[in-house]
Length: 100
Image (cartoon, rainbow, N blue to C red; front, side, top):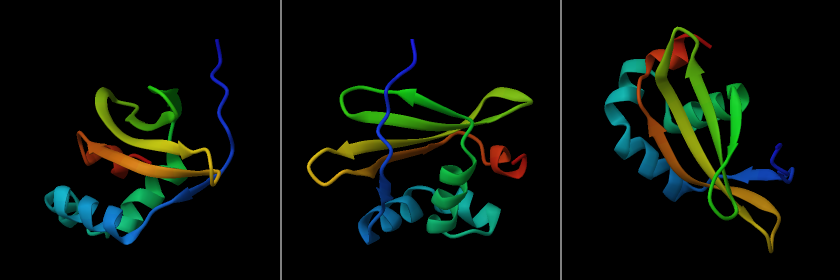
């Protein structure tokens, strides 16, 4: 059954960028990109949207050659203001980004 997902803007603030930059410093340096470029790339090139718990969804980018190489961004819908907010970013393998 297909999930019903609301279309809305994605909000990312300075705290999110700082958190991503700190948590994924090695991966970002290896890719020679900033945290905001990293998020933008995934948001623009995801392969799949998965329904998650509550008001959240997962944007997933998968390496076509290795199913376990994925990047996941969790977005939570702010119902009051009608925007998606980045809650969590998980990077399993930076090779995924080079196969976009």
